[in-house]
Image (cartoon, rainbow, N blue to C red; front, side):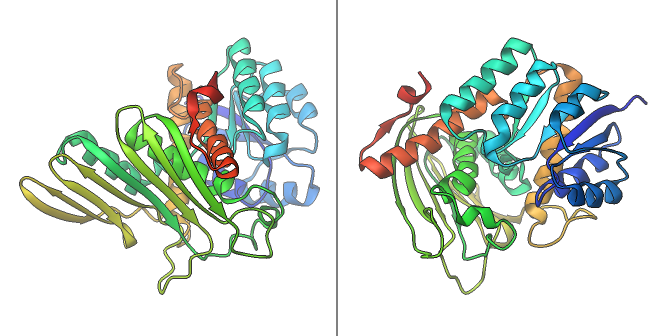
Length: 344
């Protein structure tokens, strides 16, 4: 079997999960890795048996020998790396958040389109097993036509110890976590036309907001609330679970703690547990996210082989990124923001 060959740029905190995900795919092989830190290169290279190491992305692309690149760096480098991939006509996956600004994101999509290469954003939360289970219930029609929904992620988990840079940016929870929750809302309820948001910084030791509440008007008439917090102290820490509530014309759906799914419809109430699989390399409580990494990478490999656009393509993710920008604009101005104005 001929394997699809990939290269990874960025060997930091989260990239190890991506390496495990690639290793699980029989038809994919990561043949080269790139990072400015030689120690991280050695650690990841030794762990996963990758011999080609680069400290320069330009040198990596100059040598070539791979079918796609997985860009797992921080947001400030994304545009330059995606445009570098496009200049070499190499299909690219880009970590979220897509870019520092919506203008940068649009430019990256344009560069990929001009080069004729697929570009996927690593927006993995919609690939979580419990979220996929919620989507399946909606598609079944058992609760009728949805008219209201809520996507909620509230936690007091210390995310700063593993990713200290998160405490330094003027933008925090909407850009880092809310972007996932907003994408879930789009995945479940469709695109949104208007956004109203409020934010707050509770933790005095960080620069950005750690609480956000967002109200979305969706194109199909659904109203949804997306609320995220890293300042919520609960008796049982739910990290990293996303809770979902949906009201439909013939029933309701509730995804609660410990992945308990309750669906109430005309025929009665059904309760089930839609827990993620604990992959051999995963660890609790991260296993939910880790499994979604493996699932989105499998999706990429399949779509790349088929020559089809991935579900979380750069073009699609512009709509999620626009919701992030709209949230910050709304929180700053106190007014409702029209999404189409940002995508024009």
